[in-house]
Amino acid sequence: MVTQHFEPRSDAARPPRMLDILALRAWLQQACARPVRLVETHVSWVLLDGEQAWKIKKPLRLGFLDFSSAQARRRACHEELRLNRRLAPQLYLDVVPVRGSPARPRLSGGGPVVDHALRMRQFPDDALLGRRLAEGRLDGATLDGLAATLAAFHLRAPRAQPGSGYGAPRAVVGDTAQVLGALARHGPEPRLAPLAAWCAAEGRRLRRRFEARRRDGWVREGHGDLHLDNLIELDGRATAFDCIEFDPALRWIDVQADIAFACMDLHAHGRGDLAWRLLDGWLEATGDHAGMAVHRYYLVYRALVRALVLAIRRAQGVAAAGPDYLAAASRLALRAQPRLLITRGPSGSGKSHLALALLEAAGAVRLRSDVERKRLFGLGALEPTDAPRAYSARATRATYARLRRAARNVLAAGHAVIVDAAFLQASQRDSFRALAASMGVPFTLLDCHADAGLLRQRVLARRARADDASEADLRVLEAQLARGDQLRPDEQACRLDVDTGVPVDVAALAARWAAMDRGAAGPP
Image 1 (cartoon, rainbow, N blue to C red):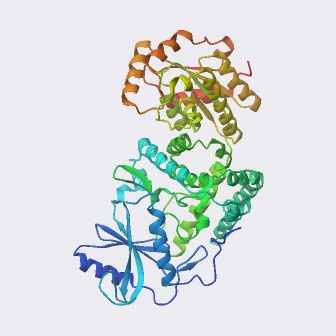
Image 2: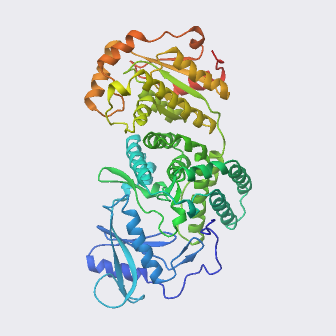
Image 3: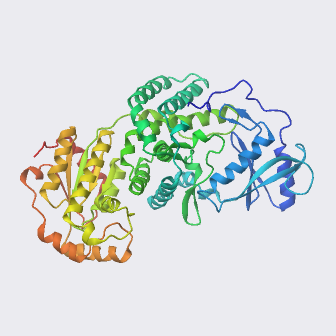
């Protein structure tokens, strides 16, 4: 099944008897006795009265939606209410009739129903993550919360039925081709041809991957439109609103296609560091590291979609500022050199903190032993384990084997990998160094250490906060300090030594990592 949501139609003009939105705004201003602001998108009007938002769909018929009848608009309003309450129930209130006539509409009283409005709670503009990013106020902690929210949403979302066609290779490749075709009809653009060639080649290469993703249950009913201006922080919680309601095929998608939209938009706005931070939190919660095989494809696809939306808005005369999404698509299509870095150090040595900062600076996927160990037992990152069982020699071997498999998958997809684990035993380090050699990628060892007294302080403080996946206590730390293997001379050659007892220049560390990779040693 290939949906036709991006093919323009000859009857895309506005039908007669369009609602007089300015008259409705005037009525609302009089009714609430305060100014009412009108915001226009390419498919809707939104009236903002200072407390509530009234969203009215334009009576349009475009290639990707049909709002030409009042009945269709009413159905779409109710569907939008239902779907968006999944992620933002406090924002979406109800659907109300618009009465009167198209020329003299009102939101109360009697008379015939001429349209419907979705009533929402109004929020301040600076609650939008897009606004916060523009003002330099979007931080990693907010994105950590968003990642947790979206991951939980994706994990509980219903899976597409095998016969639905959603997420099938033909649909994925066909939708991308339709977006490219629609963009071409907006005028000559020399960057489209190489992007079309790349998408076609990648679509063929990934065909079996797309099918496997669908078979394995990763095609689900998601959001469909997770760009920055649809992401928000409400009541201290980061979430999303304004999902796709008008075409099921645009929201019944691979979860990687959903999260890729937000990551792409951060990349397009020049904040790759935040994009990797968001992806890190989402992957940690979902465990979908195998999905990195298709992540780059969906980054490019999402950039093309956003470029098309802006082109449609401009053609309608609606203000449409934004980054150059075609340039972003071209950059994101480039395959970087995959490389592998593993950490080494006892509990409290700052491995996880440094790995998080480094993945933002260098662009990498992080794999944490503390998280993957718990995942083996069906537990979330902050859930307690049955320590004797979870930390047995057998469980530790299984944890490192899981890390190795995940690292292989991400490296094969063309991404850098940071494996955040203690790696106190030479055999553990050798296994990952051999993996890097077998895949022909550079290998680096990040050796983290600090004064023993500081390590103890950090472990005690972390235990008291109870906000991290690590369950190490002082007993574990003392055992680690007593038994760790020394590095061999050949390991010293690929070692980055970091004293975490003093401030670390992460940008300089990322540069050192890159320099080490250019002269990486071979297998042991």
